[in-house]
Image (cartoon, rainbow, N blue to C red; front, side, top):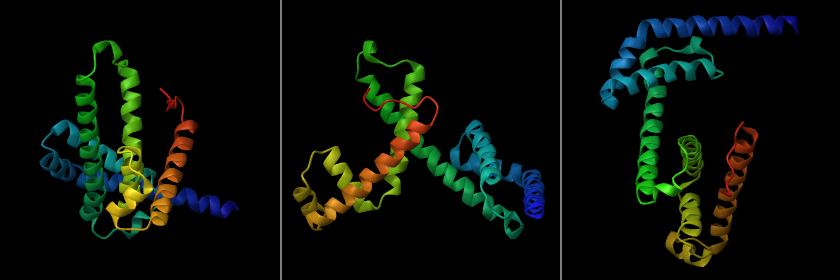
Length: 189
């Protein structure tokens, strides 16, 4: 048991050293790459830091990395996709608020909570298969029946039920995650 703990601590120390080396050798290059992708130096700096934080918190053996820039690019590319997805959601939120009277606008804190929740819902929907996501959206947003959805998707209504069960399970999992977090928002308001 003591040897396992010592090995784990040694691996963490190795990981910190490897990340430090990656940061020292490739941070400037990654920052430039991200600046080119985002067109914004501040966002590029944020995502550069996020890339290295993600490496630190993920349980993986970094000693196997043969192409550091490829490794960093893969992580950063995912963060760029998340960044643009979040920007799209933020813009949709801003557009929706613009059509509402100021008297019903939530406080800035509440807006931040709601935006974070919308991003989590988007991530949950993205985790579903294409057909499950479409079935869920058709049912919940467009109010379509399972029979109507089955015709649009070209599947049986039994498959639509399966897709809806998958989506509802992910909704319940997301609700449980939000409930466990400090300051979770209520879905009723």
